[in-house]
Image 1 (tube, rainbow, N blue to C red):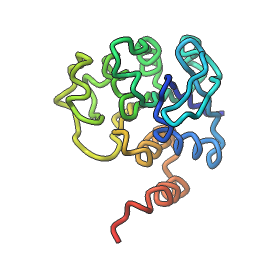
Image 2 (cartoon, one colour; image 1 turned 90 degrees about the horizontal axis):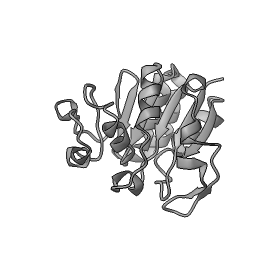
Image 3 (cartoon, helix red, strand yellow; image 1 turned 90 degrees about the vertical axis):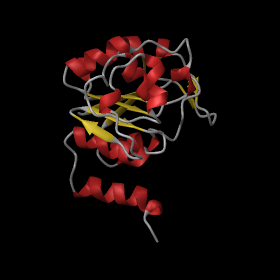
Length: 189
């Protein structure tokens, strides 16, 4: 069974991966799991409390298909969790690695955005990480899929969902339907 593990931190942005995990689990029968640094329970910016399935440190990249970094203020702090090792291991194992909003900071710190097309909230957002990928930055409002790296600004949970599911080989009429359904409010009148 296909498995997606989403990494959450204290104060994570609840809306950013909600559509991805709901569609993956409900419509595509994907096993969705959640990890936090140290395996500790966290609460979202909106107060949604989550008891994780595992600690980030215990993620077995050989057993997963996608590793997703949910955004939140924790990633822009000086004491942001260092998850670079698991991100690099997932990428090197050919898995999908995805980050949305400030979750892209973790990918940048790990060097995953240095040589692939990507986006985030802005290039200024990524600069403090020391990343070298500025020439590959795409200033656009929707997700960027490059190889098996998926990035998106925090305002793009629909295209982020589509990008992650597409990298898992699920781009079909069903996914197109759900993308249209979730993005319907953004269509011009």
